[in-house]
Image (cartoon, rainbow, N blue to C red; front, side, top):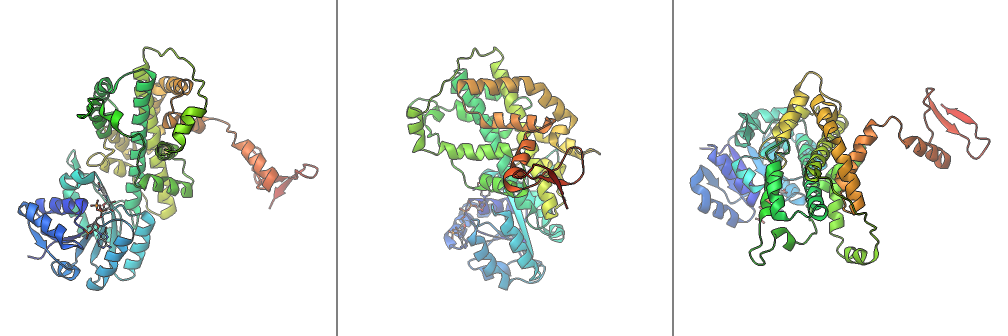
Length: 475
Ligand code: NBP
């Protein structure tokens, strides 16, 4: 029997997706550049379903029913182009190439256009959930042509996570839409992790609550509106004790955070779009700062602190929880707003409610909150910003006094809380009647004749700053 799908690239993600497909009843042809991975997959998991082991790309293509579906799961970047170049001469019109790796959305747009010219479908698919998700049901974010989704969609939906009987997968938009949404998902994941880190630091350095005790606090928080995979695993990591030293595990981990790049990509794309994703940006830069290993010891020795002693309120732990929730809401609002900007720029018509719904299961940012976000966008009047949805306006308003207290306390104690504080600045900036941007415009007009608009007249103006300071209306 011809295989219904082929998978090339059998490192951890490709092998687990192939197994997931086979476990769901599909016949899967498998291939890897070096034969050893194929053999290992068949030897260890061949009994889980129908696999067709192949050694060459030609054998892989020959094993597939038509139109063919080939899923590429190799390292993002040049390897994807190499595999595409090898595949294209072997395929026929209407065959579908799927890239399930973490490719940059601009690469996906380029590849899609090039392959469309050859009569082939190219589908960039964001896959979230790590290796376990790939095996048991990830969140899947497909782009590419709508036509290709008719053939591919049912398979992807079947192997995805399901929440309330709904698959965490549906078609998002053309060309790079899927990879773009996955990139923003990862950016939000950075912000989610950073706000958790800030809460931990305030509770530890501010209130002196040790990791073991904090583990119980996070486990408790996981029962309420913060309920999410990341809060759940925070309780696990904070409760873990290092077997070698008997110390809390996190005290033996070097405090320099790594990055694979998707958070940075999100910020770069946001800069291009002029989209203020301050929470994601601060999260990326907080990781970068943590890795300034040469400068940090010097700063510890030389830079003054002048911390202010603060009597923490009895409500401090609850205040921190509310600040975390409010900052998290802002990060989601900013990420979704970036999707709106991208949707306009790239012509994708992204459905925010649908996107929030497929993040409810399988992926790293899965959270109870996403159900409420999904509902907020599914009504007749989707909000222009998540924070304008009545339930979120109320929630963030209720958290505001605690949030202000926590940010002020963090500043006085000298505990950095970049996302807590920048999210509050975003919130206040958005709601402020007059912003100092008017002064920025005045300065720009003085030094660079960049012009400005007036509050009381139509048109664009310039003041003759180096002359008699009369105002000239521009054509
Ligand atoms: P890797 O990203 O580690 O890539 C290893 C695979 O790429 C192997 O199969 C390797 O073949 C193949 N490959 C390379 Br490298 N260069 C190649 C080339 N020029 N031609 C053909 N094959 C080539 O695998 P992974 O961790 O399974 O991730 C796969 C994709 O999924 C990546 O884009 C990753 O970013 C993404 N992703 C990963 C995770 C995760 O949790 N790991 C989560 C979500 C998405 P070889 O065996 O012959 O060397």
